[in-house]
Image 1 (cartoon, rainbow, N blue to C red):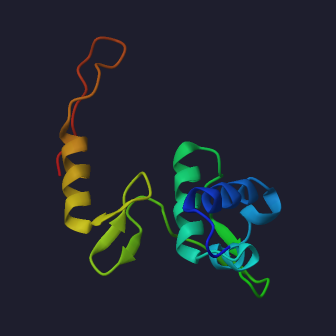
Image 2 (tube, rainbow, N blue to C red):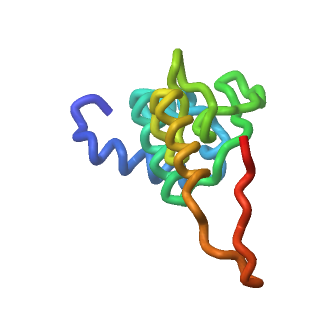
Length: 123
C-alpha cells in the first residue's frame, strides 16, 4: 500500500481488525497481510481497544500459527526500559504512572450508601 494516504491505510486496517479471524492474529501478521507497517497496525489496534470496538487481548496467533500469551497494553505492563502502558494504551514513564495511580488512590471517592464514611487503607 505504498503511496496510499495514511487515512486510507488506517481505514483498511480498522476494517480488517473488525473481522474475528484477524483479531486473533498478531500485529506483524496483519501488517504483512495488508502490506502496511506493524506500527500502523499496533496504533490502530490500541485505538480500537480504547474505544471498546476491539476486545482486549490475552493471546494471539503468531505468523507461524502458534498461540502466544500476550501482556501488552494492560495498565502497568512494561513497554520498554523505564516505560509502562497506562490505562489507555499509551506509553508513559513508569514513575509518572505510579504517581498518577497514587494520586488517584488518595482522591476521596463518593460516600458509600449507609451514611458511614469510607475508610482509606494505610500504606
